[in-house]
Length: 362
Image (tube, rainbow, N blue to C red; front, side, top):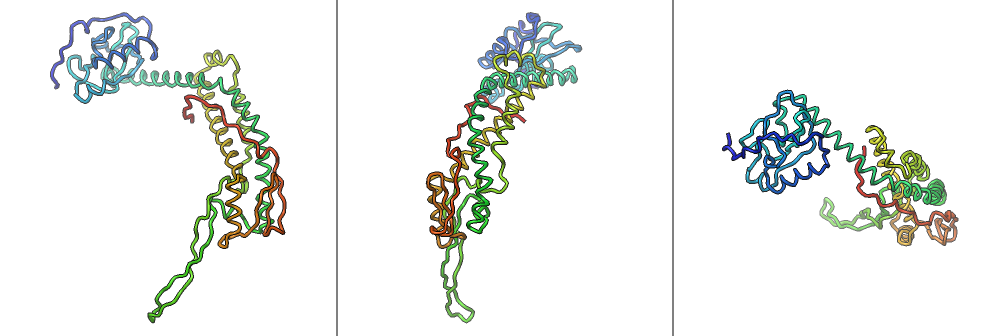
């Protein structure tokens, strides 16, 4: 056993000062954490009762703590009133325990009350973790719900752009395949434009005479932005936006969102957080996809496509030009066809409003 610690007599006095259970974010809990941070001695906090809890004690956990790093590294651990009142016991995972019948607070080891009442310990842990999750959910929603109207407004402003993107995505791949007589998606589906280069190589025949042969090597000519525009059966961004709007309108509580949150059951709050988190994630993804697809007709992309179409090693020789909203494409410049892009296709897509404290929601 470790050496006996010098425990002052006064810590064993019963301090029945707490008729009401402290909340885990209360001033009392903050005071305890600050005391431990500055002293490394939970047992010397002014309100700590260092007596062993009664066998029939009912316990509630209202906080957790670690000793400061310097104490743990020096192996200067804290005593526990449950099982080791005068000797070092723990450094991490300490618990702030409240006992309603005695109206006292004890600072104890992570699992030490289990030796007195294992079931009571497990149930108290479950209640504590549920309370923590409840508080986090409320805090998360208090931060995010005021932003729901702005997110809805942004999506509604982006809807005409999404509709234009969907129209182009629906018609352009078929148009290109008809004009070029090649499945262009198969050539660009990894986001790269490739060409085949020929290289002569000298080799020795079996009779030791020299010969030459031609090697065909595939090389990346350029990367291509917005290539998912050509994906067959790509998702309809406008439909995805409308589905997000339906979800967001369920959690658009208006100005009374605080009172709505307070009145909710825990399960309803969790469902609200889940709906909001999923809707925001999906809206952000759709918005990014639209912005990326619009890059297909950026000046750099047009230049790369034109160069690739002229390259001797391209699997598809073609003429490609963008004249305002008119896409001119054909196997040669004298035999091209015209594809007209909707005006809304070129409208800048609006990013989702900044959302603070976003967490992962299953």
